Amino acid sequence: METIIRMQDVSKTFIGRDDQVEALKGVSLEIGRGDICGIIGMSGAGKSTLVRCLNFLEKPTSGTVFIEERDLSSLSPAQLRQVRREVAMIFQHFNLLMQRNVLDNVCFPMEINGVKKADARKRAKELLEVVGLQDKAKSYPSQLSGGQKQRVAIARALANNPKILLCDEATSALDPTTTKAILHLLQKINREFGITIVIITHEMAVVQEICSHVAILNEGELAEYGSVEEVFAHPKSLAAKKLVFRIEPKEALMESRRCVRIVFRENSSFEPVIANMVLACRTPVNILLADTKDIGGVAHGQMILQLPDDEASAARMLHYLRERKLEVEELPSYMGGGEAGESDV
Image: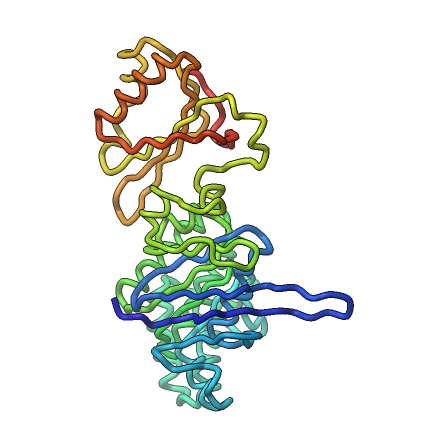
């Protein structure tokens, strides 16, 4: 696939009066045209710094960014402004102009770029239809819900026909139902307009909901990058495993527990595999975590089990699972996230 964004060995250091912080450390990353790419990591991983470096709102201390093979570090201020028209942003707190109504908020970036008023208003009305707010054109931000405000922000971001949309924690201030609706709207925009979308988030569920690729940041470094399906099924780095497996950092306490992770794909996520295994092997197991997601329209799931200490029983169970062509991975240091709650089966 054609690359639209390329980060080349990007580092960013913030220097304070008494110390300095390395927010990014030699990050190299390529994002394909038309992708929805998630950038995920814990707080302080460097996610927001990375997204601001993508359009040079933050200039890297070293390294550079290419947008359609244009080196942003070599551009004049006027050329950089032109590129930024093609790279729109939406934010966690919407950043709407409170004294303007919805229609005028969407018109604002077109006014700045010298679009005629009549043309700007026509375009704004079209975009409000895209985001489902055509009946709110004369309303003010104070009269809108959080989800409606974010829809206005998305419409405004689309006003100048961008090629790339950067979303910096755009759903973090929203409830789960509204978050899902906004993510589906972004997916629709990606599909219908071909806009490349980069989503900054700390939630794996957001990535799994709509992203095609995911980059995992850890302490300013790129820990892992790949398709969402591959990273979910086979996380390689410790940072990725913490996000996918929900590992606690107290490995030594659990070394005696024999835990395995099963990855379900397609229809297997709806089959009673574990119940059938327990009946066949006549031995109970503990379910430490269970999770099913829809990734790219295909059902995927994972389950982490604590197998019995008896080696023969555990071996029978592993054989049973692998015989059914499930992906089974032993986790010698899994701590048990417990988010789904432990249960005996």
